[in-house]
Length: 287
Image 1 (tube, rainbow, N blue to C red):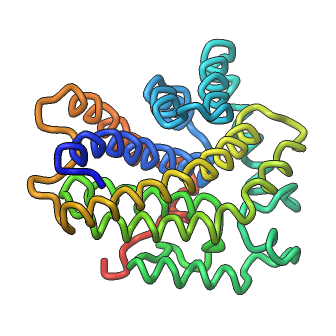
Image 2 (image 1 turned 90 degrees about the vertical axis):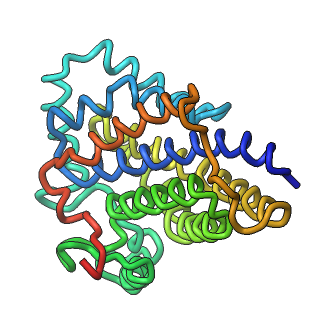
Image 3 (image 1 turned 45 degrees about the horizontal axis):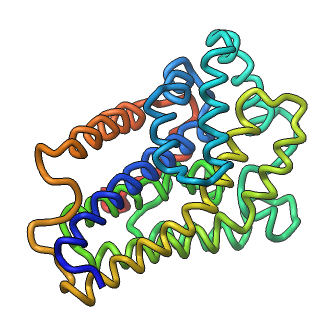
């Protein structure tokens, strides 16, 4: 079991990973939830995004492949051309007209029925409500749409960062276990199938690769959430439910500077509003 010193040291590594997953879930939320614009493409191809992917990737070849893909795309493709092609690809995969080649929501993959508002859709809606959240534009799109799921996980990831920094180990462990359950029950269930289907798209400019990257990210995230929750539970056993003085990077440390850069980029990402993203935004029920 970690003592207070070990807990602090290990919490800095965990803070980095929690920030990375908040950034990546937010990125996928914005990318899959609205028609891409110049600001969105710039963020996808930014050095910060590549740095976050590298930090999170560890030894996973799929995540490292995402970093290489983004770097090559940035070097080899004219941004204006990429934007036009990405818009066409997004429209074909996520909007239409006509039948979509791959449904971007969970329910059809579970039931093999084409209807989009199904029993599972309501189950996911209930889960959001249990966390005090609801779609801003309820009934416009299914609650189990991939963009909304990523948005939900981004919000929950942000909550985990807050709990860690406050040293609230009990709340952190509970939040991580809840996120682990959501990934297990509502993301691992279909994203690999969605990615395989998207790979059959007549173009592979950006979105098939990014859908495949999300599927790989979620598989890794399931492991991270399990291990991080166990770490928090071990910390509770050794140090109590609350770590005095909080956890994570100490003020004025090199890590704090690095984390501030990611947080600033994350704030910029949250302000980007690609057309259509409002249909996938969750808001507090009490707001």
